[in-house]
Image (cartoon, rainbow, N blue to C red):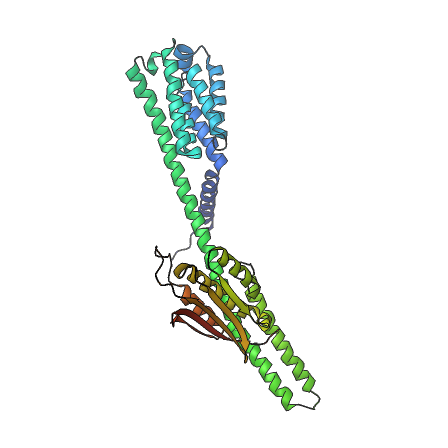
Length: 387
């Protein structure tokens, strides 16, 4: 491959940089507004001789100044399109100039939507018709009603219609950008959740093994010089594990704390207000569970109360949370109704699977189903270290 000389390469690089700069500069809103105003002024300038002859007694320089001021109103078309619209109507009545009206109606439709564009067209056509009926309307702007309408109406409808179409495209692009941002945030949250689970599963496991190994070494070194050190190491590993659980659970996926057992009475109160009585009994020792286990219990009880309200409205729900033999037992029961609800409940069918997954995540067992006229949910989790 032949190497290009240094000078042509520099020219190519400068040209590419200039194109990138010009492209970014041309996309700037203020630059686009300035170019739009200059384009409008250029079109209106073609009629400067006619302003003195047929439309108005303005001379050339004064007509150019007036048209320049009118075109300058397009600089505020994004934030105040009605200002540009008002100036355009003044030009229609004073100078019989229709060019600025096209830009004004487009701006109304583009930056204020379909309703504003519709009202703008109606107002423009009505105002122009009033001007047409008054003496002094120039012949070249339509000497009969049919020619007037064939000139004025298409101008307004087409300009506003193009503006409304552009407005919808802007909305679609904004919606797509928002959806992409939402998808990105959702992906980030999912990744954070996966990282949190991995940290809990792998790092927590290593901390547990470190604690157990330290206890074994402490027993072997009982009475020796390092026994106290191994005990301190074991306690530090347990403390780090508890802290890890608290950080993962309390921060949650979206930064909000994950509710635990303290939030269960509020769940019961809401269910009772909705017509589902709740009988709840929680062992005092359960409040000393790690946050991640309390979150699992809360998730199970919450879903059970929701399912009872859907499928067995009005039936009493018994909730029992006990800690025995190093295990946490969650038992939720409610009577099965004699007849199903009048309308089929709205359900995604994933509640039970979600409960089972949450329980299995912390190493527990889960079962749910009808039993002797009752619907029973039983979850058994390892209690772990109590705080």
